[in-house]
Image (tube, rainbow, N blue to C red):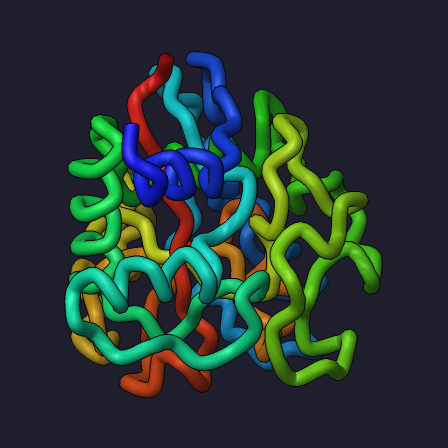
Length: 250
């Protein structure tokens, strides 16, 4: 194994997520209460309806990276493929990455380490964040400032990945709330059985793929495990869009 490949392998801290049941989404009759709880954020109830209905769905075993892809990891890819060098500190999440570029990184890395690296599906992401229960945030049901890099911290920028260990999910996955919003491989569509007024498409989105977790500039509503959203602005750096890796189970 070459030195570059060894370095790439060592940089990914995989977490094994066992097969299990995901209590996905939010019960339709609970949506008004959720919207009321976060009324100060100005998010309309219609946005939360995209989470309905609550469904128990089986998610096969998989692996997910403990933290998002960093500037340092992306810099190796950029240098090897002739892309511009990323801005920022090496241990911060890389942001401003288009979905197609995130997929290209996964393919490039996978070819070098001999693994089918990819973006997580939306269900895998939520399974990694929620575990086997219906918790609201990766760490539990109550929001607490200081467990994630969101707008209430007032930093206005990213922090080193893994800076909030007390905000870990039940499986020990970090930064699933805040710091960088994260691409999934899932195209937006209403959940099966969704209320009739949930939009069939989101034509206003810059990209049709679902993002999860929220970034440093977002409020606590986007840190909820069930919250489905997307890249609604073209400036992916300003809105803090990054990604983390997934792979088949060992």
